[in-house]
Amino acid sequence: MQASPEFLTLGRWCIQDIDRIAPTLEEMYDFVLKDFKGDERVRLRQFIDRALREASDETLQRLWNETDADIYFPTAQDLRAFLIGARDRL
Image (cartoon, rainbow, N blue to C red; front, side):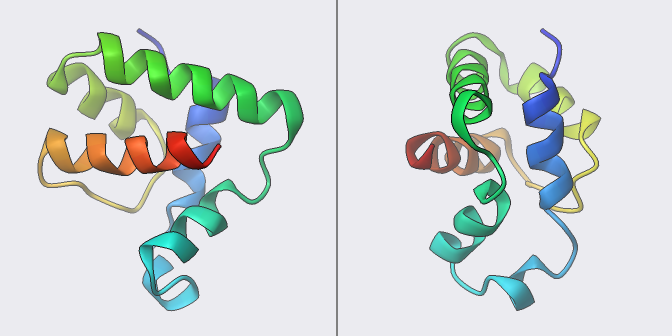
């Protein structure tokens, strides 16, 4: 599985010190998803949904590491929880 362009963009929005811009989890989701519109939102949701269903923990972490994200998830379960929350808001 290869990361979609939308997934790579999502990762770029996960910047260092995001907690200063968006102190709550809800605000963080709003911040990282704010520029996704229309078909782009649909494609991101579809990619995240597919990755959550099909990717192993190792593959999911590899996909996240392909992004430019500054946010680190200590476990695959933490990453899955973050992605579930993002998907559910799209």
